[in-house]
Length: 116
Image (tube, rainbow, N blue to C red):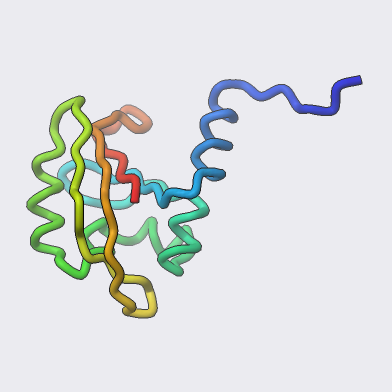
């Protein structure tokens, strides 16, 4: 008997989202509100899921003006890459990151996914 559970596609995507080693954020276009994060993001940045969901993505940046400007450029289906940006953890520690971003629809809301 096979003990591996059968997953529907939503569950498969949720598993991948939470098992990857990259910090992932889904951010609502226009507002910059964080609408979803994965386990790695919570571990790396030190915020709880509830804390993240009350934040804007620019709060993660040690360079918020640059991050907001870059966020406005993520408007099409192409991948956007930011080779170096400074982010900060809940503790205030600043660290370098590379960001890959792509426009998506999340629960029918225009958004973008950020992979750190």
